[in-house]
Amino acid sequence: MAIALVTGGSRGIGRATALLLAKAGYTVAVNYHHNIVAANEVVNAIASGGGRALALRADIGDEAQVMAMFSALDREPEPLAALVNNAGILFAQSTLENLSAARINQVLNTNVTDYFLCCREAVRRMSFRHGGSGGAIVNVSSAASRLGAPGEYVDYAASKGAVDSLTRGLSLEVAAQGIRVNAVRPGLIYTDIHASGGEPGRVDRVAASLPMGRGGQPEEVAQAIAWLLSDGASYVTGSFIELAGGK
Ligand code: NAP
Image (cartoon, rainbow, N blue to C red):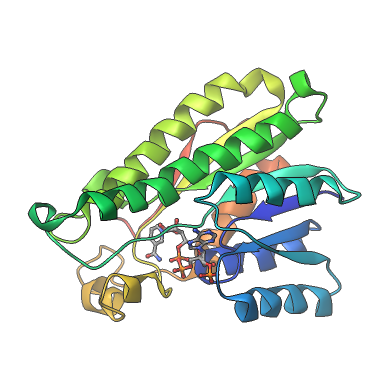
C-alpha cells in the first residue's frame, strides 16, 4: 500500500498510532530516539499481526538525522503517504521565571523545528508539484496550546501553539498539492511523558477535575489520527480535533 511515518512511534500515543495504522494497511515506519527495545516491540507486534513495519532511529531535533531517515524511506518500495508528527518532549514542572534559555530552546527545537523539518521532507515527496501522489499529515499538538500550562511548562504550551500555526499555514500552502494537514490536541493521556515532567501520576491527580472525569488512553488519540489520515477525512484540512475529555 503505502508508508506511514510516525515520529516517536515507539511509545505512548505514537505506539498506539503505529499499531492502528498497520491495521489500516500501511507499512509503518516507527521512528524512535533512544529506546530501541520499545521500537522493536512495536515492529514485532505489527509483524505478528500480519503487517509490515520498520524501526528508524533518528533524533528528529537534528536536521541531518531527519534527512537520513527520509532517505531511508526513499529506498523502500512503497511511497510515503502519511506523516504523523508525534515525537515531543517536556521537562520538569516549573514557573516561567525559573526557565533557562537552554531548556526553552531544546523544547522548541524538538517540538517545533523538527515538526517543520519532517513536514518539509514529507511535502517534497508527496506534493503534485514534486511529482508525488499527495498524502496526509497529522501534527500532534496539545490542549496546552489553548490552556497555556501555567506553573508547569509554558515553554511546552508555547511550542504546541507554534504547531497549531504550522498546521494552519501549511494546510493552506499545500491544499492544492494533494496534501491535507490537520492536528489533534490531546489533553491528559496516560503515557510516560508525565514522568518527564516529574509527576508520573499527573493524569490521575487531575482526572477528577476534567468534565469527563477521567484521563484519556493513547488508543483514543490514535483513532482520531487514523481517521484524519484516512479517505474518510478526504475534505478535512487545516482542522483540529480536541481529545481532552471536554476541557
Ligand atoms: P511519550 O510517551 O513520552 O513518548 C515519546 C516518544 O517520542 C517516544 O517514542 C520517544 O522515543 C520519542 N521521542 C522523544 N524525543 C525524540 C527525538 N528527539 N527524536 C525522536 N523521537 C523522540 O510521549 P506521549 O505522551 O506519547 O506524547 C506524544 C505526543 O503527544 C507529544 O508530541 C506530546 O507533546 C503530545 N501530547 C501528549 C499528551 C499526554 O498527556 N501524554 C497530551 C497532549 C499532547 P524513545 O522511546 O526512543 O525515547
